[in-house]
Every structure is written in C-alpha cells, then in structure tokens.
Image (cartoon, rainbow, N blue to C red; front, side, top):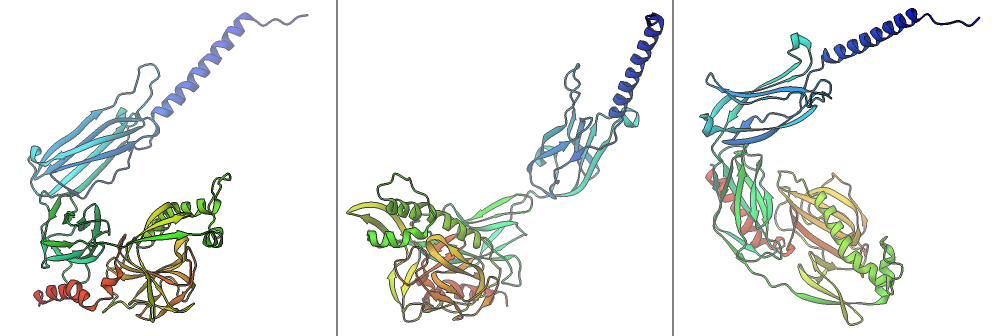
Amino acid sequence: MENKLDPVKFIIRLVVLMLVCIALVSVWFLWSRLEGEKPVIATEIPSFLNPSQEFVLNLSDAKSGIRKVWVAIEQNGREMVLRNDIYPLKGSSDLVPVHTLSVPVKVDVKKLGITDGKAIFRVMVRDNSWLGWFNGNKTTIEKEVLIDSRPPEIVMLNRVLNLNQGGAGLVIYRLSEPCPTSGVMVGDMFYPGQAGYFSDMGIHLAFIAMNHSQKPGTEIFIKAVDQAGNAARSGFPHHIKRKIFKTDTISLNDNFLNQKMPEFDVEVPPDSQKPMLAKFIKVNKELRESNYQKILSAVAASDNKLYWEGIFTRLPNSAPRAGFADHRIYMYEGKEVDRQDHLGVDLASIRKSPVPAANNGKVVFMDFVGIYGNTVLLDHGFGLFSMYSHLHSFNVTVGQMVSKNDILGYTGSTGMAAGDHLHYAMLVRNTFVNPIEWWDEEWIKNNITDKIKEVQSTMK
C-alpha cells in the first residue's frame, strides 16, 4: 500500500521549518548587530599643532561599520567642534556599512580664535552596533596638544662662508627651539645639521658641499622646521669660487675590455657585435649609478662626534694618476662611447701597498662595490666620510674604530681598475668633494677649525 504524506502534517512541517529559518536568521542578524568590537583610530594625533594644521584620521570598523565621527578641540574651557559627521548605511536594500574612512581634519588657529599654548584634542568614533540601546560601540581619544604658531629663530654664528666649486665647508648656527629638521640647502641638496658638539644643544654643525657641477649663483640658506611644522629660512653671506675641471680622453682597447669585463655579471644583447664593449657601457653607466646608491646607503647616518683631527693624510710615496671631477670621454676605435666624471683621486704606489686611514674614524662599510671593487668607508663624524677603493684585501671590520695611519687594507686592481692603485674619495653626506682641500692644513684651519674656535670663544 502506498504511503501518502498527510497534507496537514506537511504544511505544519513546512511552517515549522520556515519559523526555524526565520529564527536562525533573526538570531544571526541580532548577533551581528549586537557585536561588541570597537572602531579603530589608526592615526597618531600630533603633539604639536601649527596655525593651519592639516592631517587625516584613518578610521575603521570591520564589523558593523562606522556611523559617526566627532572631532573637537578645547582651550581655556571653550570647546570648538571641527567635525560632526554621520555616516548612514549605504543603500536601503543591501545595507552595506562604511568600514574604512579617511577623514581630513584642519585646525585653523586664527579662524577658531585659538592662542599659542596648551589645548585638548578629542576624537570620538561610533559604529552601527545595536549595543548600548542602539548607541553602538564607541572609541575615544583625548590628547593634550601644544599650539605653536611661531617659526623657529635661526642665528648664523660664523663669518662669511667661502666655498670652492666641488668643495666643502662648515656652517654653525643656533636654533631658538628643538627642530626635528634643520640644515643647509645648497641648491637642491640638503645637508642636515647636528647638535652635540657644543654644550649648548641649540647650536648645530652642518658640513656642506658644492657639487662639482654647481656653480656661483647657487642658492644657499639655512632652513629649520619645528615640532609643530613651522618653517623658517635664513640666508647668510657666502662666496662661491668657480673651478674648471680637467677633461681626459680615455681610449679603450680590446685587451682591457677582454681582461676586465668578464668580471662583471651584466647581461648584454646576445646579438651584440661587440659584447665586451656593450658590457663596458652598461657597467660604466647603470652599474656606476647602482654602486653610488649603495654608497649613499652606507653614509646615510653619521655620528655627531668629530672623530678626525688635523690634516687628512694621503697614500704614502704615491703619485697622482687621475684628479677629482676629471671629465672623462671614453673612445673606442676613434668613436666616443661614453662620458663620466671621476669623483675621487687615483693614487699609485708599489703593488699591494698598505693603505692607511686618512684620519681617525669609524669603519661603517667594508665590501665589494662593482666598479669600485673592494671598498672601505670611514665615518669621521657629522656627515664627513672618506672612501678607499680597488683594494686587494681588507685589514679592518665594520664597526671598528681606527686611528690616523692605521692600515685599512692593501692596494689592488679590483673593480674597474686597469692597474694596481688606490681610488681615494671624500664625501660630505651624499656629495663627493675634492680631497685636496682636506690634505691642506691651511684650508682646514681657515674653513673648519677656526670657525669652531670662534664659536667656542663666545661661550666662555
């Protein structure tokens, strides 16, 4: 006999199933609406605010979404609302909440009538949760801030600054307040100042440089930005002496190319008719720039101590083979194939000559650097570095303190060197400068040590 489902029972079961589904959906919906996770305020409120401070509040709420953002500032018992925004659910049918927001905030001190001094900054964010009788979860931040509308004062402490094109100099200045950013602009190059040499922490030293391609007329000034973001600039008397650098023509031959180029792991087009020449051009341009970036990384930080003392020494019993900023024109079979500037001094002595430290310093780099070969970099403090390249071998380790004339390694022909010699260079921050200045006792006295003594004499 065939069993038939009672229609009444079927309807009852169907209704029960529907009620269970509705109940489950209702429970899930209520559970999601009654979530207890608070919104997140990811932005750190600045401790200092300038007259027209602008920043962005990055807000998020992963579950029910953001409903309200309220921002205010209070000073002397008067509260001023900066933002009071409501963010309803997007769309009436799909109910998609706003999960992330970037809210711009501007504190216009003059418009709000706020004066310099302390204030209270408040932020409140609510979400769409039904907790707290539909008030939702709330995250608040309250922070004491300092309103600062005055830019820092800059006082130059030196007399007239004299600079050679491709040379270095020293600027000493005093700031009226702590500034996270201060230093000297030379054209588009920035040379940060550092405190710590003098007992007065407001006094900063900044070693600066004229790039070999910068000429008289280059704009030079001190700039400072305080903790509130107020900026100041100060010019000062200076004189730039133009220098004419030598031009050299270097003829490449197959013997040199076939000897040196296989040392470099550089790919060239397989159909190149002169693969070793193609490799040379790529090494001399692209690898040179990559090597420069590696050097910049090594000199990115410098101790605020003057390690060096007196003149910088050069490789003993050596003859110069190439000068600073020599403009090199590379020729192959009578045709020009490349141009580059030689930003150091080449010194040649006997093979594998011991290489002394030019002055006291700290070893901050010791490695193979492409065209420069085995290279050592010394930090002499306050952004001044010396560089020793094409070494055959090393005699120091990174982090080691060395004294003037300590042996760093031995000359060689590593990198793109045609013969055994030392490539010696000096840098002020990220700029190569003429080493000859630092071999000159009179230049150091007039441009560096006398300036320091002049400031010291005023502090007694």
